[in-house]
Every structure is written in C-alpha cells, then in structure tokens.
Image (cartoon, rainbow, N blue to C red; front, side, top):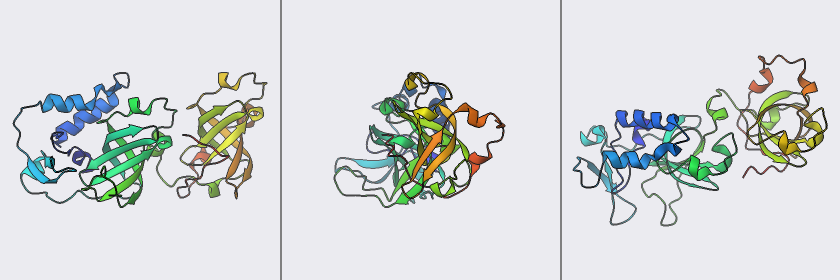
Amino acid sequence: GIEANAKEHQHRVVSSDSDADLSRGTEEDDASNDENETNSSEIVQNDYPEGKYVKCRVLGNGRSKAAVELSLRDSRLEGDNMENDAVPKPNDMIHAYVVSTTKMGCFVRLSRSVEGRVILKELSDEFLPNPGAMFPQGRLVVGKVKSVKKPNHHGKKGNVSATAMLDIDMRESVLLVSGDRVTMDDIQENSKYTGVITRVESYGVFVRIDNSDVSGLAHVSECSDSFIKNIHDLYNPGDLVKVIVIKMEKEQKRLAFSLKASNFVDDDDSDDESTSSSGSESSSDAMDEDDE
C-alpha cells in the first residue's frame, strides 16, 4: 500500500521500498524522541553506501536534467506494477516521509506521484518550540487526509511527477478519534468538553476542543476558583483540560470557556459524552486565536 510506496526518491537518494524497510522505519519512528530519530537518512546511507551496486528500474525524469527517478521496489523490478500509486481519499490514514520542515509546517512525500503538507498547528497537539527537530527530513510519519488537491507545478522547486497534493493532519487527537469531527454548529452553551491548551497569555488561556478545529478563550477569571497570581505557573501549552462553554457568538465564531473545577464536581470522569459530539470538519478558529 501507500506505506511501502513512500520510499521512492530521486537520483542518488533511493531506497528499497521493501516491507522489511517499512517495518524498521516504523519501529525507529516510535523508538525514541530523545535520539531525535537518529536521522532516517543515516539508515538509508547504511543500507546503500556510496559505490554499492544495486538493481533498480528507471521510472522517469527527475526535477532536473541531471537526475532520474529510480525505484528499488520488487514490484517495480519485476515489471508487475508500473502504474502510479493510488491517491488516498479524505479521512484515509496514510504513512509518509518528511521532505522538509519550516516554521509554517512540513511537506511530506507518500510516493513519487503523491505529496502532502501539514500546517504547523496540525503537526502536534502539543506546543512545538522546534518543529524541525521533531520532524527532521526522512522521518516516517502517520497522518489523516483532510483534502486532496491538484499540485501547483509553478516554480522550479515543484515535483513535476506529483499528481496530487494532500492536506494532512498529524495530531494524535485526530488520529485516535473515529467518526465526524466537532464543528461550531455542534457547540451549545453549558456543554462540557475536553480539550488541549494551545496558548497561555496573561489574560487567559486558549483551548482547542478535542476532535475539532474549534477553539475558545478561558479568561483568567474563569481559569480557577482561586485567585491566580501568575497564570503561567498554573497552565502550559499542551495541558489537557475540561471546559464548559459559558458564552458563544456563532456568527463571530467566538467561544468563552470556564475551567473552574467547581463546574465539574458532579461529573463522572469516565463519561465524556460531550466530547464525542458528531459533525463535519471545521477549520474555524475562535477568539482571534493564532496557534502559529
């Protein structure tokens, strides 16, 4: 499937596309963030040192006249599978390799014909002080397809072989939740939800509701039943919290939350029905939140 397709690279950067390589790549991806993934590129170099003879098949021209696209996959070598890989559909789970990461997000490649992009706030549920360190070039990642578009071939840096560009969400809260996502239309006053803090300011905290792109502000006066001297001592980006909607302006797509523990004293922690509200995906941001 797509997992085995993601290892087709251009020119000298080639890899085997074998199931064994994929399995090993997945294990390394999960092994240790402290090792900073030990660089997937080192693994490719160990398997394919300079000067090693390999059997490969030419797939087509590369991005420049001096490069060609090669494949080491058995199915390509045997000639049984010469078609471009199937393009995933929205809500499909995919595996891909990081091509580059910037302060705006990262670009990934699923195969020679399918690429993807992930905006910064959808890389992780937690705050990322250094996205490039967490998602280095060559890292194997998992995501969910949000939408499929035709690639923009304008400019010299585009992959001329790409036939599809995917918008991808890699947040764990999205990957682990099945069903439709919560939208602004699903939100009701006095409803309770779980969420993650995305930003902490002196005047309050911004919270994004789980399984949604819906966010709101909990004013500092609603962040605790006790007086808060320094809100930064109490909350940090990435903290998981419970919220209750105390005010909403749907037309302006604004929500006001309360995090006071007194609002949840009678709650059963094992019953979070309000967090599983259904609805189609929304890209609405609230209360002028800017996660980037």
